[in-house]
Length: 312
Ligand SMILES: *Cc1c(COP(=O)(O)O)cnc(C)c1O
Ligand code: SF4
Image 1 (cartoon, protein in one colour):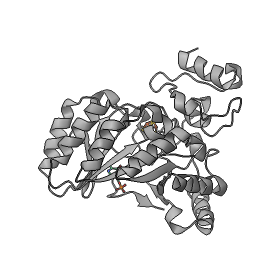
Image 2: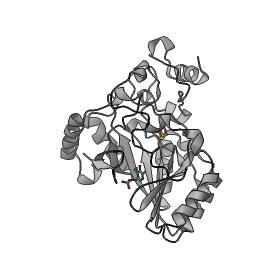
Image 3: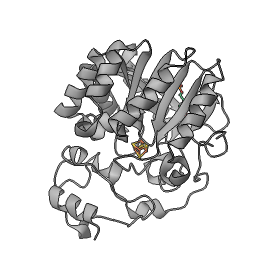
Protein backbone atom coordinates (compact mmCIF):
# COMPACT_ATOMS: atom_id res chain seq x y z
CA UNK A 1 0.00 0.00 0.00
CA UNK A 2 1.42 3.40 -0.94
CA UNK A 3 2.24 5.92 1.76
CA UNK A 4 -0.32 8.38 0.43
CA UNK A 5 -3.08 5.76 0.51
CA UNK A 6 -2.11 4.62 3.96
CA UNK A 7 -2.23 8.19 5.26
CA UNK A 8 -5.58 8.83 3.60
CA UNK A 9 -7.16 5.68 5.00
CA UNK A 10 -5.85 6.36 8.48
CA UNK A 11 -6.96 9.98 8.52
CA UNK A 12 -10.40 9.23 7.12
CA UNK A 13 -10.90 6.02 9.10
CA UNK A 14 -11.45 3.94 5.99
CA UNK A 15 -10.22 0.44 5.32
CA UNK A 16 -8.62 -0.26 1.95
CA UNK A 17 -10.93 -3.21 1.40
CA UNK A 18 -13.92 -0.88 1.34
CA UNK A 19 -12.65 1.18 -1.55
CA UNK A 20 -12.37 0.24 -5.17
CA UNK A 21 -8.81 1.48 -5.27
CA UNK A 22 -6.45 1.10 -8.20
CA UNK A 23 -2.81 2.02 -8.30
CA UNK A 24 -2.02 4.60 -11.00
CA UNK A 25 1.72 5.04 -11.45
CA UNK A 26 1.54 7.81 -14.05
CA UNK A 27 -0.94 9.97 -12.14
CA UNK A 28 -0.91 8.63 -8.59
CA UNK A 29 -3.08 9.43 -5.60
CA UNK A 30 -2.03 12.87 -4.37
CA UNK A 31 -3.98 14.80 -1.74
CA UNK A 32 -2.62 17.74 0.23
CA UNK A 33 -3.24 17.83 3.96
CA UNK A 34 -5.46 20.95 3.79
CA UNK A 35 -7.81 19.22 1.35
CA UNK A 36 -7.76 16.00 3.34
CA UNK A 37 -8.97 17.93 6.37
CA UNK A 38 -12.07 19.06 4.48
CA UNK A 39 -13.15 15.47 3.78
CA UNK A 40 -15.65 13.84 6.14
CA UNK A 41 -14.11 10.83 7.86
CA UNK A 42 -15.76 7.49 7.19
CA UNK A 43 -17.81 8.72 4.25
CA UNK A 44 -17.04 6.91 1.01
CA UNK A 45 -19.45 9.19 -0.81
CA UNK A 46 -17.79 12.38 0.29
CA UNK A 47 -17.80 14.75 -2.72
CA UNK A 48 -14.18 15.75 -2.11
CA UNK A 49 -12.89 12.23 -1.63
CA UNK A 50 -14.41 11.19 -4.95
CA UNK A 51 -12.39 13.84 -6.75
CA UNK A 52 -9.06 12.41 -5.66
CA UNK A 53 -9.43 8.67 -5.13
CA UNK A 54 -8.27 6.50 -8.06
CA UNK A 55 -10.89 3.78 -8.52
CA UNK A 56 -11.43 0.85 -10.87
CA UNK A 57 -14.00 2.75 -12.92
CA UNK A 58 -11.09 4.75 -14.38
CA UNK A 59 -10.01 1.69 -16.34
CA UNK A 60 -13.17 1.66 -18.42
CA UNK A 61 -12.62 2.57 -22.05
CA UNK A 62 -15.28 4.64 -23.78
CA UNK A 63 -15.67 6.00 -27.27
CA UNK A 64 -14.85 9.65 -27.59
CA UNK A 65 -12.58 9.78 -24.54
CA UNK A 66 -8.96 10.46 -25.50
CA UNK A 67 -5.63 11.42 -24.00
CA UNK A 68 -5.63 14.94 -25.44
CA UNK A 69 -9.30 15.99 -25.51
CA UNK A 70 -8.72 19.74 -25.87
CA UNK A 71 -6.01 19.55 -28.52
CA UNK A 72 -3.30 21.30 -26.50
CA UNK A 73 -0.61 18.93 -27.69
CA UNK A 74 -1.34 19.81 -31.29
CA UNK A 75 -1.47 23.58 -30.77
CA UNK A 76 1.73 24.16 -28.92
CA UNK A 77 4.13 26.40 -30.81
CA UNK A 78 6.58 27.06 -28.01
CA UNK A 79 6.80 24.45 -25.25
CA UNK A 80 5.48 26.72 -22.49
CA UNK A 81 3.00 28.81 -24.45
CA UNK A 82 -0.48 27.98 -25.70
CA UNK A 83 -1.95 30.63 -27.99
CA UNK A 84 -5.39 29.37 -28.97
CA UNK A 85 -7.61 32.38 -28.28
CA UNK A 86 -7.49 35.96 -29.50
CA UNK A 87 -5.69 38.50 -27.33
CA UNK A 88 -4.69 36.12 -24.57
CA UNK A 89 -2.10 33.45 -24.14
CA UNK A 90 -1.77 30.68 -21.67
CA UNK A 91 1.64 30.16 -20.17
CA UNK A 92 2.36 26.82 -18.52
CA UNK A 93 4.11 28.22 -15.48
CA UNK A 94 4.31 24.95 -13.63
CA UNK A 95 3.53 21.46 -14.84
CA UNK A 96 2.93 20.24 -11.30
CA UNK A 97 -0.04 20.28 -8.97
CA UNK A 98 -0.21 19.60 -5.26
CA UNK A 99 -3.34 17.58 -5.86
CA UNK A 100 -4.26 15.08 -8.53
CA UNK A 101 -7.89 15.52 -9.56
CA UNK A 102 -9.04 12.35 -11.24
CA UNK A 103 -11.07 14.18 -13.92
CA UNK A 104 -8.16 16.38 -14.98
CA UNK A 105 -7.58 16.67 -18.73
CA UNK A 106 -3.86 16.98 -18.06
CA UNK A 107 -3.55 13.55 -16.51
CA UNK A 108 -1.90 12.29 -19.70
CA UNK A 109 -0.08 15.53 -20.55
CA UNK A 110 3.63 14.95 -21.16
CA UNK A 111 4.66 16.90 -18.08
CA UNK A 112 8.37 16.32 -18.51
CA UNK A 113 8.41 18.15 -21.81
CA UNK A 114 6.75 21.14 -20.17
CA UNK A 115 8.75 21.46 -17.01
CA UNK A 116 11.68 23.53 -18.02
CA UNK A 117 11.82 27.13 -16.88
CA UNK A 118 14.25 27.84 -19.72
CA UNK A 119 11.19 27.78 -21.91
CA UNK A 120 9.80 30.84 -20.13
CA UNK A 121 12.35 33.16 -21.68
CA UNK A 122 11.35 31.91 -25.08
CA UNK A 123 7.69 32.41 -24.17
CA UNK A 124 8.27 35.93 -22.81
CA UNK A 125 10.06 36.82 -26.05
CA UNK A 126 7.19 35.51 -28.15
CA UNK A 127 4.67 37.50 -26.09
CA UNK A 128 6.77 40.67 -26.34
CA UNK A 129 6.84 40.33 -30.12
CA UNK A 130 3.07 40.03 -30.51
CA UNK A 131 1.24 43.22 -29.60
CA UNK A 132 -2.17 41.60 -30.22
CA UNK A 133 -1.72 39.86 -26.87
CA UNK A 134 -2.96 41.93 -23.92
CA UNK A 135 -3.52 39.24 -21.31
CA UNK A 136 -1.21 36.54 -20.01
CA UNK A 137 -2.77 33.62 -18.20
CA UNK A 138 -0.54 31.66 -15.89
CA UNK A 139 -1.72 28.10 -15.83
CA UNK A 140 -0.38 24.59 -15.51
CA UNK A 141 -0.54 22.32 -13.77
CA UNK A 142 -0.75 24.92 -11.10
CA UNK A 143 1.36 28.10 -11.24
CA UNK A 144 0.93 28.62 -7.51
CA UNK A 145 2.71 25.37 -6.79
CA UNK A 146 5.87 27.25 -7.77
CA UNK A 147 8.26 28.72 -5.28
CA UNK A 148 7.03 32.27 -4.56
CA UNK A 149 10.19 34.09 -5.66
CA UNK A 150 10.33 32.15 -8.92
CA UNK A 151 6.68 32.96 -9.58
CA UNK A 152 7.28 36.63 -8.83
CA UNK A 153 10.26 36.72 -11.18
CA UNK A 154 8.08 35.46 -13.99
CA UNK A 155 5.28 37.90 -13.19
CA UNK A 156 7.67 40.85 -13.19
CA UNK A 157 9.04 39.84 -16.58
CA UNK A 158 5.50 39.81 -17.91
CA UNK A 159 4.74 43.20 -16.35
CA UNK A 160 7.64 44.75 -18.28
CA UNK A 161 5.88 44.08 -21.58
CA UNK A 162 3.95 47.28 -22.21
CA UNK A 163 1.14 45.81 -24.33
CA UNK A 164 0.20 43.40 -21.55
CA UNK A 165 -2.65 44.89 -19.53
CA UNK A 166 -3.88 41.94 -17.52
CA UNK A 167 -2.28 39.14 -15.59
CA UNK A 168 -4.53 36.23 -14.85
CA UNK A 169 -3.63 33.34 -12.57
CA UNK A 170 -5.51 30.06 -12.84
CA UNK A 171 -4.94 28.08 -9.68
CA UNK A 172 -6.50 25.48 -7.48
CA UNK A 173 -3.88 26.02 -4.76
CA UNK A 174 -5.85 28.64 -2.75
CA UNK A 175 -8.67 26.09 -2.49
CA UNK A 176 -6.87 22.80 -1.96
CA UNK A 177 -3.69 23.83 -0.18
CA UNK A 178 -4.09 27.40 1.09
CA UNK A 179 -1.34 27.00 3.67
CA UNK A 180 1.20 26.68 0.85
CA UNK A 181 -0.16 29.42 -1.41
CA UNK A 182 2.06 32.41 -2.26
CA UNK A 183 1.29 35.35 -0.01
CA UNK A 184 3.67 38.11 1.09
CA UNK A 185 5.72 38.74 -2.03
CA UNK A 186 2.74 38.31 -4.31
CA UNK A 187 0.54 40.64 -2.25
CA UNK A 188 3.29 43.21 -2.06
CA UNK A 189 3.69 43.15 -5.80
CA UNK A 190 -0.07 43.25 -6.43
CA UNK A 191 -0.52 46.37 -4.32
CA UNK A 192 1.74 48.38 -6.60
CA UNK A 193 1.40 46.79 -10.01
CA UNK A 194 0.00 48.64 -13.03
CA UNK A 195 -1.57 45.41 -14.31
CA UNK A 196 -5.17 44.32 -13.94
CA UNK A 197 -5.03 41.26 -11.73
CA UNK A 198 -7.42 38.38 -12.04
CA UNK A 199 -7.32 35.16 -10.09
CA UNK A 200 -9.47 32.27 -11.23
CA UNK A 201 -9.63 29.67 -8.50
CA UNK A 202 -11.05 26.23 -9.00
CA UNK A 203 -13.63 25.02 -6.50
CA UNK A 204 -16.23 22.35 -7.26
CA UNK A 205 -18.07 22.04 -3.97
CA UNK A 206 -18.61 24.35 -1.03
CA UNK A 207 -17.06 21.82 1.37
CA UNK A 208 -13.72 22.71 -0.23
CA UNK A 209 -13.92 26.23 1.20
CA UNK A 210 -12.07 26.19 4.51
CA UNK A 211 -11.40 29.09 6.89
CA UNK A 212 -7.80 29.08 5.68
CA UNK A 213 -9.02 29.55 2.14
CA UNK A 214 -11.37 32.32 3.21
CA UNK A 215 -8.56 34.25 4.94
CA UNK A 216 -6.26 33.87 1.99
CA UNK A 217 -8.80 34.95 -0.60
CA UNK A 218 -9.62 38.04 1.44
CA UNK A 219 -5.95 39.05 1.27
CA UNK A 220 -5.79 38.59 -2.48
CA UNK A 221 -8.99 40.55 -2.95
CA UNK A 222 -7.92 43.42 -0.70
CA UNK A 223 -4.70 43.74 -2.64
CA UNK A 224 -6.33 44.16 -5.98
CA UNK A 225 -7.16 40.74 -7.38
CA UNK A 226 -10.51 40.26 -9.05
CA UNK A 227 -11.54 36.80 -7.84
CA UNK A 228 -13.42 34.38 -10.07
CA UNK A 229 -14.15 30.67 -9.84
CA UNK A 230 -14.38 27.88 -12.31
CA UNK A 231 -15.83 24.47 -11.57
CA UNK A 232 -16.14 21.24 -13.41
CA UNK A 233 -19.55 19.61 -13.45
CA UNK A 234 -19.04 16.15 -11.98
CA UNK A 235 -21.45 13.26 -11.68
CA UNK A 236 -22.40 12.39 -8.08
CA UNK A 237 -20.20 15.22 -6.81
CA UNK A 238 -21.86 18.52 -7.73
CA UNK A 239 -24.58 17.62 -10.24
CA UNK A 240 -27.61 18.86 -8.31
CA UNK A 241 -29.08 22.36 -8.33
CA UNK A 242 -28.91 22.48 -4.50
CA UNK A 243 -25.16 21.88 -4.50
CA UNK A 244 -24.48 24.35 -7.32
CA UNK A 245 -26.63 27.06 -5.73
CA UNK A 246 -24.93 26.55 -2.37
CA UNK A 247 -21.53 26.76 -4.06
CA UNK A 248 -22.34 30.08 -5.73
CA UNK A 249 -23.54 31.58 -2.44
CA UNK A 250 -20.54 30.27 -0.51
CA UNK A 251 -18.14 31.68 -3.10
CA UNK A 252 -19.83 35.07 -3.04
CA UNK A 253 -19.46 35.17 0.75
CA UNK A 254 -15.72 35.06 0.07
CA UNK A 255 -15.81 37.74 -2.62
CA UNK A 256 -15.57 35.29 -5.51
CA UNK A 257 -17.83 35.39 -8.55
CA UNK A 258 -18.68 32.21 -10.46
CA UNK A 259 -17.15 32.32 -13.93
CA UNK A 260 -17.29 29.01 -15.79
CA UNK A 261 -18.97 25.70 -15.12
CA UNK A 262 -17.13 23.29 -17.38
CA UNK A 263 -18.53 20.25 -19.00
CA UNK A 264 -15.94 17.55 -18.44
CA UNK A 265 -13.12 17.25 -20.93
CA UNK A 266 -13.43 13.80 -22.40
CA UNK A 267 -10.20 12.44 -21.06
CA UNK A 268 -9.53 8.73 -20.74
CA UNK A 269 -10.14 7.59 -17.17
CA UNK A 270 -12.80 10.21 -16.35
CA UNK A 271 -15.81 8.60 -18.02
CA UNK A 272 -17.57 7.95 -14.74
CA UNK A 273 -17.68 11.68 -13.96
CA UNK A 274 -19.57 12.59 -17.11
CA UNK A 275 -22.87 14.48 -16.87
CA UNK A 276 -24.94 14.52 -20.05
CA UNK A 277 -25.56 17.83 -21.83
CA UNK A 278 -29.31 17.36 -21.34
CA UNK A 279 -28.87 17.09 -17.59
CA UNK A 280 -26.37 19.96 -17.51
CA UNK A 281 -28.77 22.27 -19.34
CA UNK A 282 -31.60 21.28 -17.03
CA UNK A 283 -29.41 22.12 -14.02
CA UNK A 284 -28.58 25.51 -15.51
CA UNK A 285 -32.27 26.24 -15.93
CA UNK A 286 -32.90 25.35 -12.30
CA UNK A 287 -30.07 27.40 -10.84
CA UNK A 288 -30.96 30.41 -12.98
CA UNK A 289 -34.35 30.41 -11.26
CA UNK A 290 -32.75 30.45 -7.83
CA UNK A 291 -29.75 32.73 -8.20
CA UNK A 292 -29.19 36.36 -9.14
CA UNK A 293 -27.68 36.56 -12.62
CA UNK A 294 -24.24 37.48 -11.30
CA UNK A 295 -24.02 34.20 -9.39
CA UNK A 296 -24.81 32.00 -12.38
CA UNK A 297 -21.67 30.57 -14.04
CA UNK A 298 -21.54 30.10 -17.79
CA UNK A 299 -21.80 26.46 -18.81
CA UNK A 300 -19.04 25.78 -21.33
CA UNK A 301 -17.21 23.03 -23.09
CA UNK A 302 -13.75 23.23 -24.54
CA UNK A 303 -13.74 21.92 -28.08
CA UNK A 304 -10.42 21.35 -29.82
CA UNK A 305 -9.92 23.79 -32.66
CA UNK A 306 -12.55 26.32 -31.52
CA UNK A 307 -11.44 29.95 -31.02
CA UNK A 308 -13.07 30.17 -27.59
CA UNK A 309 -14.71 28.05 -24.94
CA UNK A 310 -18.06 27.03 -26.34
CA UNK A 311 -21.17 27.96 -24.32
CA UNK A 312 -23.80 25.24 -24.26
C1 LIG B 1 -9.46 28.61 -21.22
C2 LIG B 1 -8.35 29.12 -22.00
C3 LIG B 1 -8.12 30.50 -22.09
C4 LIG B 1 -8.99 31.51 -21.41
O1 LIG B 1 -10.25 31.60 -21.96
P1 LIG B 1 -11.27 32.65 -21.35
O2 LIG B 1 -12.55 32.39 -22.07
O3 LIG B 1 -10.70 34.01 -21.62
O4 LIG B 1 -11.35 32.38 -19.90
C5 LIG B 1 -7.07 30.93 -22.87
N1 LIG B 1 -6.25 30.08 -23.51
C6 LIG B 1 -6.46 28.75 -23.44
C7 LIG B 1 -5.54 27.84 -24.19
C8 LIG B 1 -7.50 28.22 -22.68
O5 LIG B 1 -7.66 26.90 -22.61
S1 SF4 C 1 -5.47 21.25 -9.83
FE1 SF4 C 1 -6.26 21.60 -11.89
S2 SF4 C 1 -4.56 21.08 -13.26
FE2 SF4 C 1 -4.09 20.20 -11.24
S3 SF4 C 1 -4.89 18.09 -11.30
FE3 SF4 C 1 -6.51 19.37 -10.44
S4 SF4 C 1 -7.78 19.97 -12.22
FE4 SF4 C 1 -5.79 19.22 -12.99
